[in-house]
Image: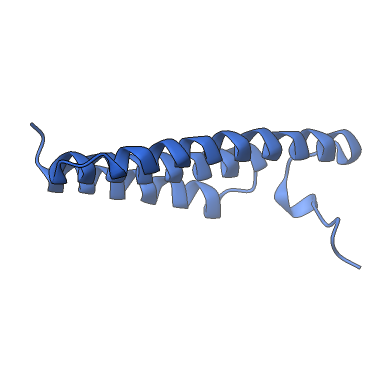
Length: 100
């Protein structure tokens, strides 16, 4: 069995890589992939803690997070495709739809 601190360190590193991808890039697809990576890191932490504590609460929470992530990916990609059709760019700097 893998020790809990190895699982949490792996989850933290994966979350940090996702955070860097979400905040440090200008491509919308890279930002969405960074957000998905962060959600998967949280799932790994939930499941690792649930396995360590011997309960299923973390696994149930991970299923809810996966469901939310699937919805977020579908809606996010639909919005990006819609904006790309109008702006012909997926660069975050070119999205000024909410500015006056």
